[in-house]
Image (cartoon, rainbow, N blue to C red; front, side, top):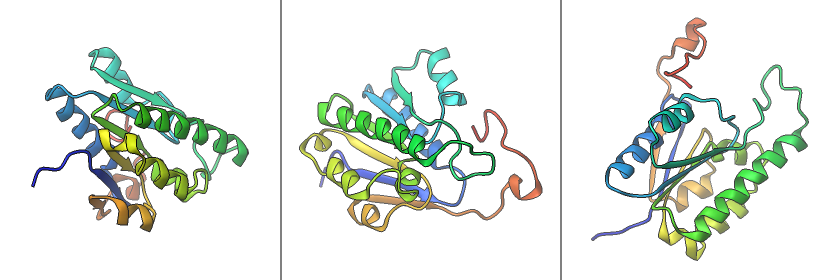
Length: 177
């Protein structure tokens, strides 16, 4: 049976969720498909932004994060993070409804939902809308909501076995971000 336009989730406490989604994006553009990435919780300063721009990859990528949330040093009010997450969510809805992209990656949306910045019912609503049937949709981020896992066609959980951070090694540009 051939089926198109499934919902995929990459979740878990291990490294590789966004990386797996970016691999799917690369594979999709290699097959001539249109790709869009909406990043929740992340600023537009990651290496994937640089690579897409530098190599003129035909991938639409937009980030709506304003900095770390609920991590030491976060000086922004929850309302500011909610506003940024809502902008990302509204943009996601717009892209899904237009149906012009074959693959849409909602990077870190699971985290935004987990922190209560996005309502899971609203997320389910856009994922099950008519427009969503035109695009494969990948959701990334830790702590995927059980209702999203039930809705998805593919759920991959990254498990942290060992990580350089455990030994005090900070995130490295081009590897972790």
